[in-house]
Image 1 (cartoon, rainbow, N blue to C red):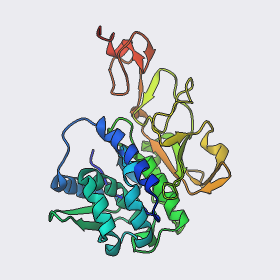
Image 2: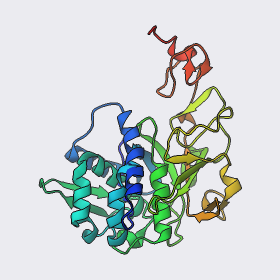
Image 3: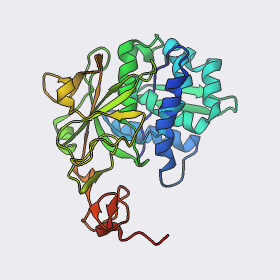
Length: 324
């Protein structure tokens, strides 16, 4: 699967959020399989993916955990300058991007994809002469995307969107992304999309920009203890709901409908209140075939060798572990 480009927000001098985005982003990158595309290949991939997904809120996830930390430096400048040309042409942004161009490119793909409307792109030309172009998709922060300072609502929505696109295993799987932008316009979706992505997955909320936390909660049924999910950051099982596999994204031990309010159609959440703070959230759905069962005869990337029937000890599918 290819990825769609997305963008993020920035606030004044807050090194901690940069570090958070990087930490989330790198963890997923480190465990990804297969060759890494170069800048030109990545731009071609983004263009293809945009064509596939621009009509709906569908998008493949794959943002690494350390990306949530790495992004902090960029957040500071972009929060004030926005995602228009002036925001991407500052010395601060260039300095941040050149620290690790491969990761900066990956982070910005998701930032732009989240913030900028479909059909628009944002570009940055590095001192090396390489031009990076990222395609918009969800349009969650239209004013910030046009160069205005990021509002609190925009900071929260972009933070939630980035969290929703992290993947513990570094594997790109399609998800359905639901919610409203800062103008209260819903991300377009169809009945067919809801039927195809029939598994209610999670709600994501928080704020990276103010140095705060990111949260996720189960939306719908929890996984059976023999099951595992390609979306491990979002779904927990019935035996172990206290694991925190995707820090700095914190899994709350409360289902989404206990802390969040739904829209009129009851398909996604419009606000979530946790620890006394109200956030603008993102809601996700997934396909049923992205949930795996230990015992189905296939050793999935979410399972490990062993002698039991749970994903982290799945002898039924992955066999016994080799002797040390």
